[in-house]
Length: 163
Image 1 (spheres, rainbow, N blue to C red):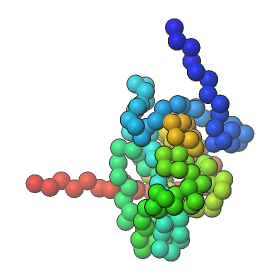
Image 2 (image 1 turned 90 degrees about the vertical axis):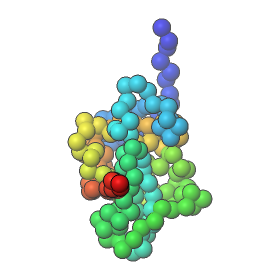
Image 3 (image 1 turned 135 degrees about the vertical axis):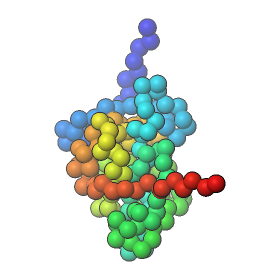
Image 4 (image 1 turned 30 degrees about the horizontal axis):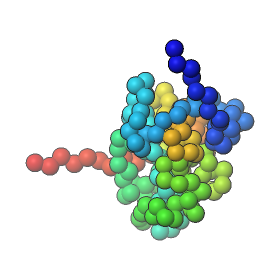
């Protein structure tokens, strides 16, 4: 029987442990599609950094199976429009590289507004990055939102069916 590999806790996991937020550390890279059998792909959420024309940086957290509606995020964040922060400016803005952005780490460093898609409330837990590529955490959505002072909103792009 294979031994379970023990990973050193990421800074995000250490922050959650210290704050007594119940979570589970996971080691897989959702960006590469290497997802364990016991993980529902729709439970994995990506943390996207955008820049609003009025507020500056704003964070949107949506399922990896969906597309973020920039229009909806702009509206709930008090902006006329928002646009993705260029990958070359991502680390300078959030402190994280592409694939490692996460609401916990961003909130520790910046007061950016954070919005989580309301679909997370329909699940027992959600999975977000743990601050390092290939590392994730499973956490209750409401616990996460309370900890990072996030709001829930409809952020998913509506799919239009064309004939």
